[in-house]
Length: 245
Image 1 (cartoon, rainbow, N blue to C red):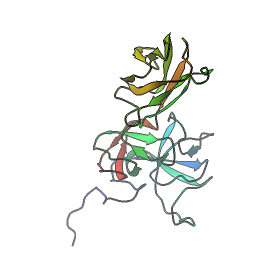
Image 2 (cartoon, one colour):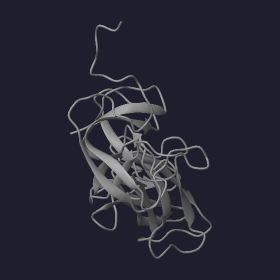
Image 3 (cartoon, helix red, strand yellow):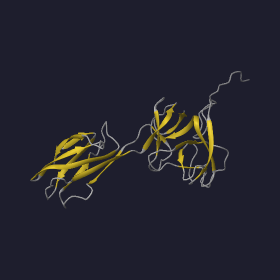
Image 4 (cartoon, rainbow, N blue to C red):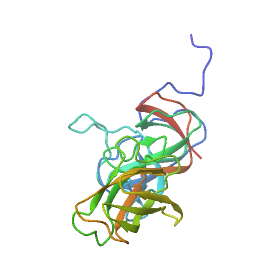
């Protein structure tokens, strides 16, 4: 005979409530399909719609709850187009995470790629380099991001500009400015720059001229959700409890 009871539920699958603490749940219509239980959703085209995030999150609505629902042909429970989905916007719920997470750490909603809607422990920055808008002369050289750590501590989301400020035969000096307009330093062709971002510029068959250069765009793959914290930890991808306040 069971003589004691707990308000906590056993570890469960994504989309189930963690415990019996206070919670708030709203209902929406799915604007597009493939909203899985435990995934975070954002506002859709109309006020009563939700969908998976596809860009930096500005209209977080909550997390899709698991409810009694038939599996699809692939054996998965998923809310499809125009289905009614219950969405938790306050309380504790099990969610899928893409990486290791820690208790009481800020929860981030992934908004890019195949894992959009899942949760992560950081903004997950990515970097891409291209010739400056308008381009450079042919064969002037190339900027290559560091293969191991292109993004360093302190990097900001936005566009870093790298511009030639002094031309030289088979060389040149470039100035690096961050997305907020602050000068981070100068770097010569052939040397490595390492402040917020890490890269090197190689010489080409034609010398750079003043004003030519490159743009490095730092993008986030996940957005911090205000008032959302992890309440359990993982050692890698799996499921964890997120608390929404």
